[in-house]
Length: 372
Image 1 (cartoon, rainbow, N blue to C red):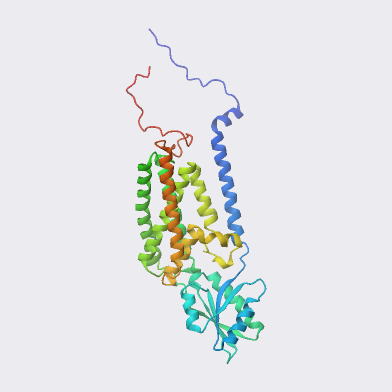
Image 2 (cartoon, rainbow, N blue to C red; image 1 turned 180 degrees about the horizontal axis):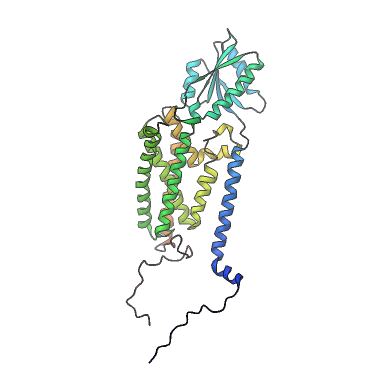
């Protein structure tokens, strides 16, 4: 007896509008709108931070053989229109150099009352744009007093570190690796871990990756490209902390928001973090909003610490390292807490087409049951 065959006719078409509704789900449309918002935020943040750099309260030391001379000059510098400088008097040049090496000031003016030429100590290792801004401001102020300045770089950037940007780009690379590693874990096994054991495994895998990425990045920036001087071991430790902190944040946001957490991590680290990191324009040149948030975000903390390691013997790196450690601990704690709270309900893998709250689909379906 002939068995009837199933029809393969797709049936009458509902028209082009029906095809659009079938091809583009509501969830996909919302995600696209989210991407558009993220893109516009990226443009706004970068242009807002960089389109009009304006020096503000740049810390500078002033020294002279006679205290009254130094105090008078500091007062004049502090009264400049727009308050671009925040001067403080010091005993002598040795004290001024110590402040620069400790990253307490960004420059120092050494006054010679016996002549008309003073010396301006700068630190291009902290960023060429910052040292150039100080040079221009002080030169104009000195010119108004009938004096000139001779520039002395007390912490010069390495020959292979163009404009002192290598530390920033190194940290950006570490940050990219951190959130991409966490995102790949979501793509392969679900945005949200199924249980606390899975969360620990993900954090462990992230730690191994962070150690490797930190070492390789430090080696490339140091011995391979000869872009950054300083301790390779210290840069390795910093890189490990940066990568793990950013990855842990991404895992935490995925635990809280599912696949959307990847976008939130990009918003935090890339959209807000990179423009405020003090890379192209160090903090004293940034607008108030970016200047305020930069030191508290991983790119800014990492960039400041990397420059401290490379050019200032590690001075000033302690605070930024604590910031990174705080993000790492917070991200790890939230990741574990989300896994415990969900109690065995893993999120769908990215790209599966399932909602975030849908359980993961087994790799092999059970074929022991008769489909009839």
